[in-house]
Length: 301
Length: 289
Image 1 (cartoon, rainbow over the protein chains, first blue to last red):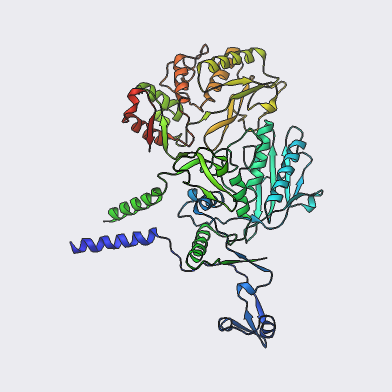
Image 2 (cartoon, rainbow over the protein chains, first blue to last red):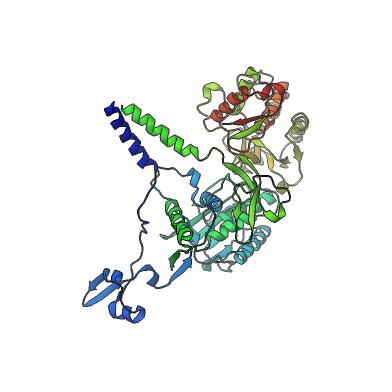
């Protein structure tokens, strides 16, 4: 009897630890370290705190102090931006593909965004209608979303977002990395900090021969490339995140635009994985609830 | 002992991962609260609070919850249906990923110039029959390719040799390509016959009709159907749309699913439907799996 209980307590305990996710500290990997000579530090920030004095580094004849996050050069501090859990659940689906992520996978999906302006260049092969529609759409986005600027450039070498079309007149595939059979596809690059910096979008009007569908697909895929967004079953066909093909010209719902705006806001750390994202929100919400204080998030250039 | 640990582990992870999704509201339509006049009692469920607005859900459905009217199910008929949708029993393992798919928008057909008149006319008469006899499907023929969503063309070695639709498998004598969205609704199709490989006129007509009918649901041919049916795997050049074909396709379009339904899910649905009380009175049955 006693043996039986002992064995099962062990099982129950190990299950409990398996099932609950807990982490003590949020590890910020690959965080750049900035050091400053002691004299300059005192000049700029005044006296050295006890905490700072624990982070001295000795180089040649100098004593250097490790700068804490808020004192780093080119850093911006932004207050926590509160969002309710319903909104965040939808956000987590389209950014982290939460419900479809394999629980035991090693690869941690991180949220991605464009830091620099998006400079579009359209190849001659792109039809006028499609080009006009996309430019109109991007102008609206630039207008409505802070920190997101999109415009057309006249030279390919000045751009970071290249769009071309495969049609009866052009069959040249500029980048074989762009894969997919549904008529519009893109390939986007990102750096170690999850910042998107280059994209190639391929339109195939031989596959998508219906004009309305083609326009819709181009807009949808372009939008997705702004954050490598996923589709979600939570939203119906009117949403750009539904993966449906609409036959009307209203591309974005109020919620779609809000999700994009939030993605380009800085009231939470960028480039994080799902777990970190959830933990930071939990911490920030706790601060807000218990101390009525908004946490600050520091972003470094 | 080891076996017990494994079973307990598996069950706990399984239940943990499924517990949160039992009443998931999907396919939500959000509207700003000011624009909504009629609000039901639970209008704040899953509402989103923004700085300048509140968005509420005006339409949605619960995942894995269905309102179905399958009528009184004949066991022989339902087996035939499962065969054409998920594949014949013996080969069903090959089609593990097969799901229920259908058209929810009008099929707008465009014929390429190279399609010969006799072929085109036969297809037109088939479209008329389908449009008339099958509820839930409407077919139109359009004159401009860029306004269509279903493209039909032919290939013959003399003049037309290149595939006009890139996703068509050029190795096949006759081939089709369908695109469906996340809800498993078809929105694009293409159908192509190589008249050099299929050289008999009557066979061309037969094969084109058979393929087109298959594209109405991504159906596979089954050995459980009578030879006069297009959905039977039996070869017969003088087929016409049979009563059985019509019945099966009508059944397919009787209930529109808005999520992915594979064979296993469908079996669960049927089981629950068979044990529900409403089925006898021909009313819709509320099923949750």
